[in-house]
Length: 416
Image (cartoon, rainbow, N blue to C red; front, side):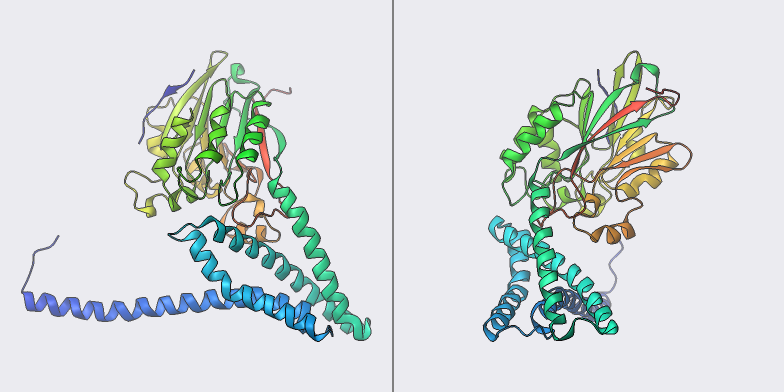
């Protein structure tokens, strides 16, 4: 069974002189901060304007020739959406954490992103048709109808994909240092449940049932458990307490915990019977062989300012037998660079959602080495990146299905 490892001024000068220095310093820093705020606000406004204006132009303003009432109604809807969206986002995801505002804002973001994507593609098609001289006077209207129809279908399908119980993805992972007694160890991976403004307590219970049906030796939750505090999401997180594992259930923080109450979530998971791997490890034994299960805080933990929180792999492995294989849980795939340098055998991560709404996966790839699946890094280290079990924000998944993952660990020479 599991055995725990370890966790992890200057002298004042002349008053007048100091005052003048401070005043001079503030005089330089203040305008710079103000300029940065103005530039940041301008960039956000331009991005929002582009997200809303391009779909409006494709659907209503590109010469489609709709009747005046249709044109006016469409314009009013997009204008109201553009004006209201930032206020709804602040109300929903700022200090107030108003779930109703968050639901509207998140859904709007998903709808606008899909419309924007297919408006770009529709615009390219429009240009090609113009170049070929086909389509005639109805060309803009045909493109507008096609963009609206494709977007509507993808949003309906994407909402279904986001709200359903994830399908199980099964994969054998060969770990050369794994002892024969650990051959066939079943590791169930959950990640990015993102309990949030949409009440998914029933969904959470069905996910727990699906995980229990997999007869796990080890269950991993790789972070981003919720958007909100443990008190806010108590009912949604409760079914995690019903999940069973023969050897251990382990959990690490994701970046979204640090938008709320990271320590509170560590305590909540302990209350539900999980082992919070807060820069620490546990050791499990099966068939006379041992596996180190280590976990680190998310890479954003240190910048959160929360005392004692940072990604600390050395602390997580302190006291572990270096000859034993290590499964490391780290929320973000990009932590694999440190894992490979330390000779970790297998890192399990989430965070990417597989992109969640195509083609966002291409943007994710800029920040992360892998978007989903099994990959190798260095001579020893493998990384499994889950697409996640839930969704963040917009209740849609387009070409990025959710998953509950069953990893079956095998020694290198095993052919079973």
